[in-house]
Each structure stands twice: as structure tokens, then as C-alpha cells.
Length: 206
Image (tube, rainbow, N blue to C red; front, side):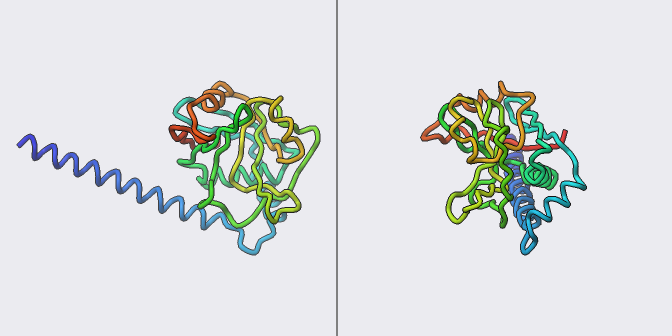
């Protein structure tokens, strides 16, 4: 009788986990599809979206604690893009998938979850890669304007090491709380810049 109950409980647990997994996959797929811009001009679209969504703060939730980020008004397209993705639940069950040696942690939508547009460049010499700076990654190939990835971002941990990145990547925000959490992620065991244990996160509006 005990074995039978354990077996049923085990089966129910497996079914529940499978159900949650399927819902997560469907949700992420739908999110990706809905966030594509297709033939819309990214600059025009993000400018309008930014006017209707003026939020300037987001919170990254991790098992090790929260990271609060202030988004700059000086980079309105990047701010609008990030707010849009957060509000659309794009940054749910994502990972910090790269520890850039002594420089930064990088995360977001890697490879299969990329969208169909780039964020127009917004470079300002005064927005440097200081400690706590938040910047978007970018692709080199076929990208002469140095437009940003719409989904992949990184957080600087060492300004001295990151100064070589100034002018190459758009800084659009900074960490105001939780740099100790960022440091923990940076210092976690890794193999060829890949964390040994995946660091999952989700981003929410405060």
C-alpha cells in the first residue's frame, strides 16, 4: 500500500512538472513571436512606446538576491526596449550565461530567443562602463552602425578592465542596489566563461 501511494505521488509530481515545463515553453515561444517588429521601424516604434511607458527602474530577481537597475533617460530607445521586454515577460527564466573575466556578467536571450530587430545606437562619451554600468551587447557582422542586441545585456563589475569597452557598447543604465549580488555571480565557479551552475533570473517592474 505504501509503495502504491509513493508511486502515485511520484507520478503526480512528474505530471505537474511536465505541465509547468510545457506552459513555460509555450509562454516563451508566444512571447518571442509577439515581440517581433516585422516591418516596423525600430526607432519610430520604440520612440512611441517610450512615450507611453515612462518607467525608469527594473529589478532583476535571482536566488542570491535582487539587483535594482536605474534606466537612463538619455538613452530613450534602449530604455523603452528594455521596459517593453520586461513588461512582456521576456526576461523570465533567463540566465546569466557568461562571466567575462574580471569585467562583467552577461545574460538575457541567447541565440534561439533573439528577436528580428536591433536597437538603434545611442552612444554618449559621458556614459562610460563604470562599475555597475548596464549595457547592451551587440553583433559585429553586418552591423556597421553598431546597433545593439535587443535582448542581451551585461553588468560591469570592474571599471578599469571595462574601460576598453567605452564607445563600443551602449550604456543605458546602472545598478543602484545589489552590486553584492552581481559580484557573487561574477565570482562563481565557471569554465571558459560559462558558469558551472546556471544562474537563473527574471526581471520585473518594481
